[in-house]
Image (cartoon, rainbow, N blue to C red; front, side, top):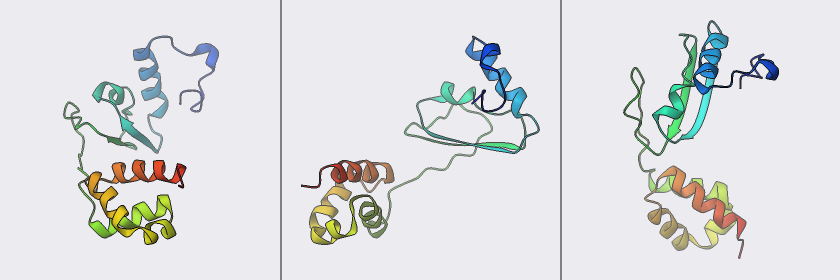
Length: 130
């Protein structure tokens, strides 16, 4: 990300903390939305929190990330059954879900209707058409 913001690789800071400082400096005053998928923990995110009010970070995680201050948290709960069926249909294919509706419902139930679980299960199914 630092190179995409203009840092010459030859002048890249060696230490993670120095890279984080450079990131904050380069993003100050910019309008930026950073989207981070499946963050492992707070430490992984802290270095990427921009130091400017014109910058925002949208992060998803399987962890609650309660150690971050001044953040807005939104929990994504279980999807309604029909929305979960629709998500599985998008990933696996509508014909396959229509052909085996009971199997689709069992898969969705096994994933607790959680979006990430349905998507991952669907991706595995899509890769195994038989």
